[in-house]
Image (cartoon, rainbow, N blue to C red; front, side, top):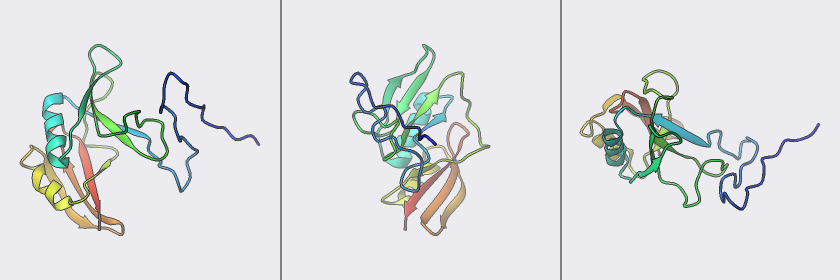
Length: 154
């Protein structure tokens, strides 16, 4: 039986597949996420406020698409097994929804501070801070109608 390997990164695209390995207990199951938005300015302000971060504006693949990138390495994060990042996305191919999967974003070092900023930033908490085996979680509806989560170690 042959094992399939990821293609090595090309010289023209550094970091595109760096460290991309077969899914195992030592790699991330998720390599990238996209959060659909209707109003990029409003969504960007919401996530920057709640998570106390800066998102970087980026061009989409098509003329009518907008993106705002979560923090990542300078050479990129997509296609890496050792880290995960993602973006807000405004365009025709994705629509915000409160149904389906939940992505839990990193709220370290203080989930309490992140939770305290959710409603002031325009979101709605639907699961207050809850302890689980790994730490603490909270679930909320963002300004675009997406059900999202935050996580911090405990």
